[in-house]
Image (cartoon, rainbow, N blue to C red; front, side, top):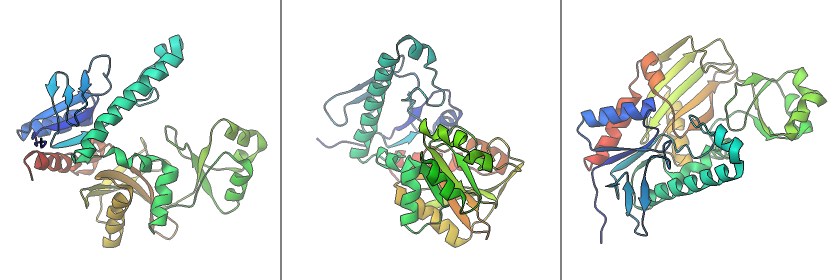
Length: 315
């Protein structure tokens, strides 16, 4: 039996997440049927049921089947995920808690996998998950001929020292969660590098130029901004955010980066090197945008909402 379009847009993420709330508000203002599946409240409160039928999907008692489109803000499927507080449960029984998170993740990824199989437009699809791991992401971009910084991911102290001899560098976590810092001579001592035995680290050439944030949606640049900051890591240290027009070749490279990684949409960070050429630092599969809209005068939220609404109307 053929699966029919429901005209419903599903938002996956925490119900109290500002981005989820804003997109839901705008969709409803456009009279688009909208369902929020609160992934942070799953499985404690949010109810999900999947049957053996590909479109047998029920969320909080409502059949959602094959929605018109899905915006994935976050799954909250790991105890370290933003907004998740699992410390008490981990302290009480870490093994059972990690097992429960594994089960949660398996079901939510299975849900997304079904929708991708059904051809639902997903912002973004689970098939692009591999590209969210930076060692894979930057390598794929570099192989496609796109400009990226010289980068090393390692737990080998001697590899770090060799990398440092090639010029000024910075270091940061492989996944994120800590500020980028400049690599100094003090960081190259045996004592400091011994920390690599606990976890690998990202080492990258220091790019001295301006910071750029670019948003790409459905094959087009929808916003590009310059972030003025005195800090090496501009996050939470922005002095000013202003709109800029990208040269055509840079805009084309940003769109190509999305295509290479299989993303329908992204917020991506670039930084200019010593020659002024922008290099791609990363693409985010669920980028924040409300702060940039507010301070930079862009309307990423509007563009994303219109894209989702277009699918709901069969466009």
